Each structure stands twice: as C-alpha cells, then as structure tokens.
Length: 256
Image (cartoon, rainbow, N blue to C red):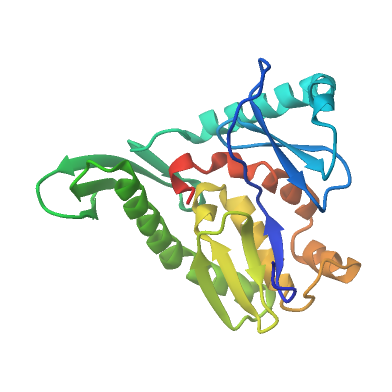
C-alpha cells in the first residue's frame, strides 16, 4: 500500500504472457478497476487491465476496436527508442545513453577468473565491466548500481540549483530505483528521485524536479498545486503528457 503522505508521478509497468490470438498480451484483474484499460510495456508487450469478474471472452473484441491506438503507441515507442539509441532487450548493452546529463557511454566486458564484477570508468566515456561474466543478472546488477551512483552525483546538485532558483527549499533527497514512480515528496519535504530519470531528456527531468519541489508547498494535486507548477513551468501540461511515454526510454536491464 502506498504511504498517503507521499504524492508521486506514476510510471507504469507490465509483464508478459500469450493468449490464443495473433496479438501477445497479458490480463491483469484489478479490484480497483472500473473499466478495461490498456498499457504497453517498454518491450512492446500489451497489458489488459480488467475489473474483477469481467468476462475475458470480450477482450479480443476490445483489442480489435483499440487496434489503431495499439499501432500508434507502438510506433511512438519505437521512434522514441530509436532516437534515443535505446536497446531495450539487451542483457549486456554495448552503449548506454544518459540523455539527462548528455553522456553516451560505450560499455566493454572483460571476463576473468576473479569473483564478482566491478565497473570502472575510463576517459572518452568508456565503462568497463571486469570479472565473472557468466551470469547476465550479475552484470545487470552492477550496471544498476552504476546508474544509481551517477544519479546521486548529478541529481542532488541539480535539485539544489532549481530549489534555489525557485525559492522552494527541501530537507533532503534520496535516489532510488522505483518501478512505478519518477519522484515523490514526503510531508517532511524529503524528495525521492528515480535513478531511471537519467535516461530522460533534460526538459522532462527538470519538470519532475519542479513538480516535486512544488509538493513541498502543496502535498497534493489540487488546483493550487498546479497553479504553482504553472508559475514555474508554463509548459507543464505538455511535459506532463510527454512524461507518460518516457518509460519507453528506459532499457529493460534497468528493471528489477
């Protein structure tokens, strides 16, 4: 259950399965759902969310009616990933593009007999992983830790700078790897930021930082809150809409 003292920007998530039709999808029954809704995962898997007790035989008909939406979202996802250079399915990526801080890293893997894996940065944006490369999950874990470190190094001063610029003080900041939110703010004015923000364009990251700083004044999404956001970011509606598709920019190896 979510802590009611936190307000957050939701990312979304999905898993995979297959039903007896040409389109792959999974069905998730939600007791909170009042109607059928669709979500597309970053790897192109479709999730169908249904209310409790819904007749699943009706799903193919619904998907047929939503075919244009599915095609449109898929095209947008593929285009975004191509422009950002995102390979969402690679277990061992050869390139990591961190749009937020304008860094494009080339990843190399050096296998040896030493236990464990360590990541080391070299000039020219070279990241070398050294150690036992047999287990792809171990490589993923090390890359996630490296991303968390990069996020701590860059997001804390970035948040402090915007806080000073907007005269919206906060008490602390933490970096996490949440599955479903980009950021959150507690009643004590502690801001939590998702390390996955590194894969987003700077304009979207700045919007998330502004959004969470505004929660230090209004810990809700009331009209007063949005008015404050609009004061500091006039284009917040467009940015908030773009943020909904931003999860497609996060590579699969960042998933827990």
